[in-house]
Length: 393
Ligand code: LMR
Image 1 (cartoon, rainbow, N blue to C red):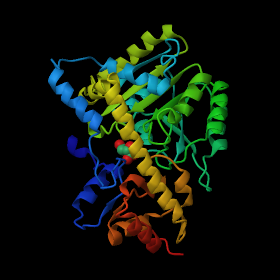
Image 2 (image 1 turned 60 degrees about the horizontal axis):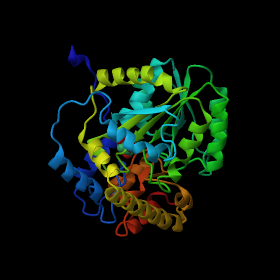
Image 3 (image 1 turned 120 degrees about the vertical axis):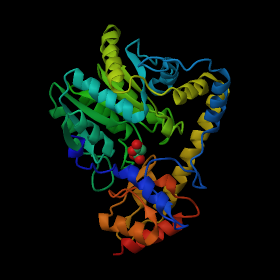
Image 4 (image 1 turned 90 degrees about the vertical axis):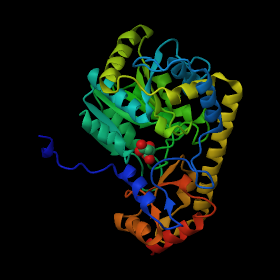
């Protein structure tokens, strides 16, 4: 029976990791999957996480099961950063549970929405390819709208149209900050418009916050999410610590639910726990426990925030350098300076992306998405020259 299965195409982003590893050219550049890199091209473990891991090894007395909700100390320690220090649970209306990375959190959020009666999910495109894959796998109908305009700004009319036209049983997935793949975020004014439209609509907001702290700062990057939550009766938040704590392979994330009333939460969370149990039983503990230890210790918290500042400053420098290059062949790199996070999109076709790989050893997604953190003082000039080569006027 199993031989009936036709080969599935490998995930294009993950396949790039292997292709890049197999390339022997010394000057190869990896702008593929979204991991932060230092100016030396490394993706080190955060110092604060290393210290917390050492403490964990010394103090952890048992690895016995925790349950589908995972490490609730981790889930709660994160809440002031996500929802604001003043009232992180919004009067007891927000509760969370751990999930295996941002992917697990998104999966759990949309599965819970489906269990509650959602059948159609609006999604701005382009989006992180796994959003569509998860929706197709559940399955849930996906209704795409344009995320961005040709001039490199967010398409506010498209998202407002999707929200205003939606009926009962519909949800919308919004990227909280550092939009993947475009780097184009809604402005604060646009978030206010989105929040107002959501407040007049039966649509359920699902906010994917996978890059908090990589745009303008932890507080600044939560603006959109908090503006929406202040305006709507209920929402789901899929959170990832994979990037802002550098825990990628340890799979650290959380699902948060904001309910109409605190009294609704036990039933909602019991459904989320049942879905988690059937999917992965319980999330991996190690990374979440390390994050909890960082957030429970003011010195480690300060160290982590410093490390995050350094990452953000480096990505801004790279963006400024790219923007300063201005027009490169047919490409205008100027907008990259005002975009946020790890990613931006270049208007390259598949052949141009393939030529960058074959002729210049530069690896990026076929969509033209680049991970700006893959660029360093040592390779950025080569990258700009290669763009000039494949995007000649
Ligand atoms: C990316 O978009 O490169 C990251 O979010 C990693 C992933 O899982 O796709």
